[in-house]
Image (cartoon, rainbow, N blue to C red; front, top):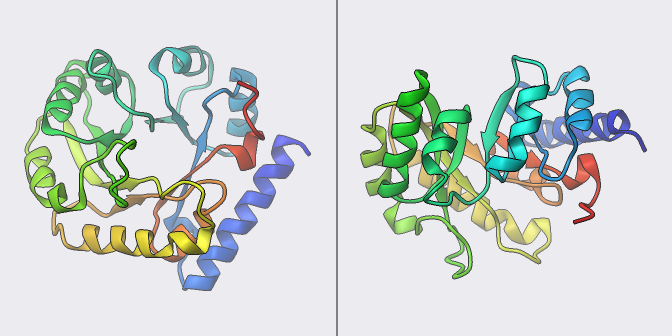
Length: 224
């Protein structure tokens, strides 16, 4: 199956999930999670109309960002290493994985150096898993208030990864909890929910996801 074929199937799944929940597909942004993909694959998807691409590693992403056409939006969706935070804030358009005020301040510094406002999301460890990044649900409101006032960044909402090794339906309560957390923030402009990946984005959309991060369903399983 070609990339174009996979993209077509993926867009149909998004449309079906939106229809099932009374939403418009225009309200859902597909982020092609391009970790491990080549610049040629990214360029091919861009030619098919994909605008948003998600990367996990600063260094790996650079060749793609430098060689692919302008006008694409680059999202950092991996864990932020402290020694890379400033550059991530400087080089990416969106940063999905803010999990502390310290990280937000360093990202903010990089964003200011870039001369443009960067959109950021707070990562939430919605299931309190010890090996995952993200702030605990109880700490979201406080961190959001602090991040909101950081210069160079614009708080757009929340992000999460559901617990591993669960089927999509078992993740529904976690996605519902994320929606309630976002609704409880009452921060102007913070209306985005980044949640849902290849195996569970259908349910995530039904529960309010505005951004889905899809890699395997587009590119196939990574070989490394």
